[in-house]
Image (cartoon, rainbow, N blue to C red):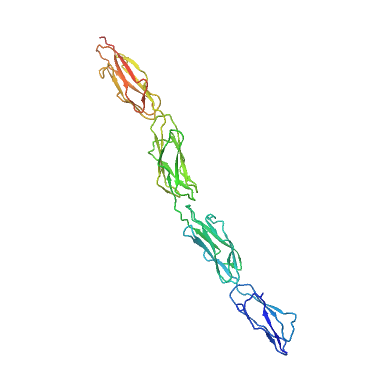
Length: 420
């Protein structure tokens, strides 16, 4: 008898008909007198790198025969396609600003029949940190049948002026692929924040007295990721002297990264001199990592707190003879050394006449700043006229930079040496 053998392809087979193979129709016939019949599997070649695939053929119930020992046959189609390479499509890129996303594409050299996993990591030499961006989780998967997949860098915007920052991504271990040409990608985050301005917070100030400190604050318009150096100098027109009247912080002033201000400190050196209020004029130079703002000059005024000195004649009277040495000295003295010139005008009265009887230093007289006294010279004129003793009364008028003390009138008596 002829024998008929039905068969079927098992659902556990991994090969797909007709993508991977074709097979002749079931059943097959073994003619009477023959001992064999053949099932033919025709392989459909492709270019996909994939696992070896199976066609599992199960025998059914034959006609005119019974099943023997082997009723299942597994035919394995051995893959002969090269493993693809995977590469980043570029070695680097730069963002337009600090917002949005950047995409790093990994690409296969050929479509694969298997998922390709690409592990990656961020290199420690990257200058951006995780406050600057977020990145897709590793590994990246290129699905079977696809040739590309993307790593996404999401930028985190900030307001800091800073250098452009980098995210260096290195490709690591691969599954179902080998490394291609570009295995590192440098993504540069382009800073889009303006350079801040730096300004003094005020143009002037005055101390209460000659003690303590004065603070000049330099302030940024926005925090920076850089240290900002602010050089400064004391203007030559300042009237206060260093170190006699003050000392000052060393230039340059540094505003640390992340901060918005720093202070110049003027330490006042007190003294006992009555003087004018004095100025320290501070000029800002050209800052580093910032530009000069609106207020770049600050005038700090040291307010004098010393009392105005009093001025007195050192004696209220004296006498001198026409026949003596011919001179008398009259001294005006202040109660304390002053930082200002003290000018003393005076008026003359009395019975003696000038120039007939005497001459005297011209009014006003000046006690120079730093000195405490000045002396007037009365020169007596010796005559032959019989006369009585005569007086020169010297009276202080209102002084400049001093107040009149107790002894403001001095009487100088010229003793006559001629009989009437």
